[in-house]
Image 1 (spheres, rainbow, N blue to C red):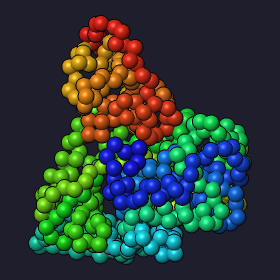
Image 2 (image 1 turned 90 degrees about the horizontal axis):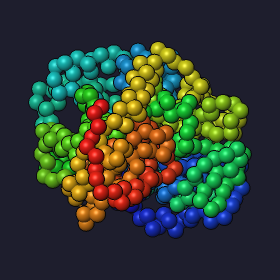
Image 3 (image 1 turned 180 degrees about the horizontal axis):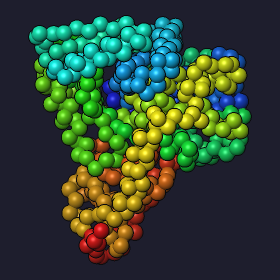
Image 4 (image 1 turned 90 degrees about the vertical axis):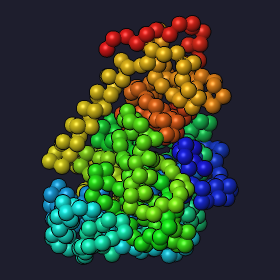
Amino acid sequence: MSKNRIKPSLWDIDIDHEKVSNYFPKLSSDTNCEVCIIGGGITGVSLAYILAGQGRDVVLLEAEHIGAGATGATSAHLDPLTDLRPSELLERYGEKESKAILDSNFKAMNFIEAISRNHALSAEFKKVPGSFVAFNEDETKLLERELKACEKLGLKANLQNFVSDPMGIKAKLSFNLHARFHPTKYLFCLAKAARQRGARIFQNSMVKEINDEKAILDKVSAKAQIFVMATHMPFGLHPIIQSRVYPYRSYMVIAKVKDEFPDELIWDLQSPYHYMRRVGDGKENLVLIGGADHRTGEKVNTLDAYERLKNFARAKLKVESFELEWSGQFYLSSDGLPYIGKVSPLENIYYATGFEGNGLTFGTIAAQIIGDEILEVSNTYSKLYSPTRLNIASSGKRFIGHNLTTAKDFILDRFGGDQKSPNDLKEGEGEILFHNGEQIACYKDEESKIHALSPVCPHAKCHVRWNNSEKSWDCPCHGGRFTATGELLQGPPTEGLKCRDDIFMEDEWEEQPPI
């Protein structure tokens, strides 16, 4: 099970982690290499496979186990069309660049299929249709608009109208471009193939810092000429990148349904949209339903996110039971495309982040681009995804809006806090309380023990917020997440929240000051 997630995903519980641990040990002594990849998700493992295949000396360092991060929390939709609908893609990037974006995604899909056929038959890769669905007349008109955009982009699509459909679908725009698979089985097989090519892969090896020539771990280091931050969000402070990507959470439930679910990937047109897919071979009638996305750390009832998904499922499907629920984190970028490459030609660090809701394909694209750049091979898409690109028309509004939100959170969160005593908390509850002129993040565990923490995220000093469904402390600024007792879960911080049990030497809790 991943320490990254309080609630394990389907892909977490469906793999033998002891077997994975036996394949990939912990780094126990200093080492040297040409390329040091940090992160064992789809970007890092794919890149290790590519570079090792070209004879490069590669070390991959994963803080936990292969697939423990975003890749293991995905819905495992393989979607080459990006989170931007065809009309949005055209409007934002024009016909030429839009076709290049799609072409890069098709090549990523081909890579994943080839790996699945040659190295990962257990990954359950299968080509399936993908469809946008409309539930009313207005949404049907939107699909007609998307069909016209598809024609401009050279995408083959089929628009169907329905008089009567069990799910209440009025129209469906379908493509024969998509696929589904088992992401952690895929990664494990790909990591084994990378090792067979000569890559050295280490798990439970968390990098705390990168200096000019070394990745620093707790007691050992890895010296390298080139470093790749394949950690979803770069750890440490990297303002050029981190000011242009914004953390979001998406929620998923597995439902057992009465009737067979079609073997296709489905997205609706709501905001945030819902997505659905069959799980496994369909014999058990299990369906994955996802959505209810929101910015990480928003002051919302995260338990309600799961309930909204379940209500949606009940409205569209004949649900017999709900078998599993989990959430995952992804990062939006300023302009809808990821940042892949170096921020300066003088640096020796490559970045890959801002994959939006398409981390499986964009993560693979990142590995292909960075691999070519390290190998000094020209890549058609390097400039398109470069972190140095500047597209004010596409990115200005989102960049300003999200960074204003970050600034507001940074300032206003310092003035909140409840006046009650931590003893008033219910078991399993966390809250920011005010004590002697400062805020304290307090959690009462199931045995009624109070855990007091500093609410200050050690990454950029924003204040964390309580997540009631995951029982975690989440930072709204850059997506750092911590357990209820302060241990680091994920994100750019490299350490946990500071323990503040010293407050229990005090007798009084102040009332909340005026804001």
